[in-house]
Length: 170
Image (cartoon, rainbow, N blue to C red; front, side, top):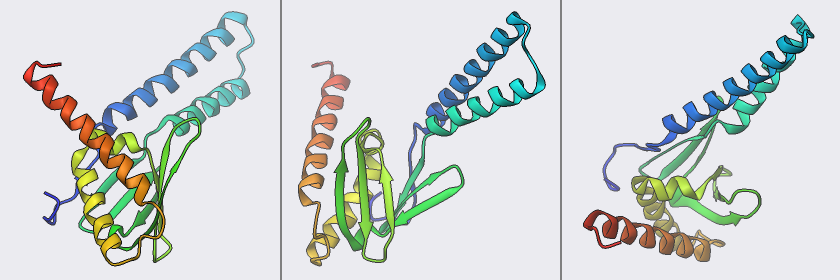
């Protein structure tokens, strides 16, 4: 897996994408029904509601995260960001409305991902961890070993929970 040449992908992305489509479609339907019920529906208002629904979809649409040997990429609505995991110089946890993991490499690449994607997809985590260990061993990773250790501990906890759940011990 981690050492092979295959690409690891986020397996839950399709479900999240359809959820974003449903939310945007529901909002558009409700807005058009309110306009129709009030008798104020016009073509420019319909265009406005379509734009609002599209904006909601753009906000909710999940990034496509994939990883291969020594790289991790995130594609969001047509734009892809990629880092070389074996050349990482910085890994930071950004707190806010939702936690994000910011990865930077020595070549100037930058990727921002949701750590939950790594928790849900152990193959992605293995690829990132393998490259980060190489960057640490080479002395490139200047900032972020603590963040990676925390994430590794979280991955271990989630794996243990999954094993307990599968064995009926939870």
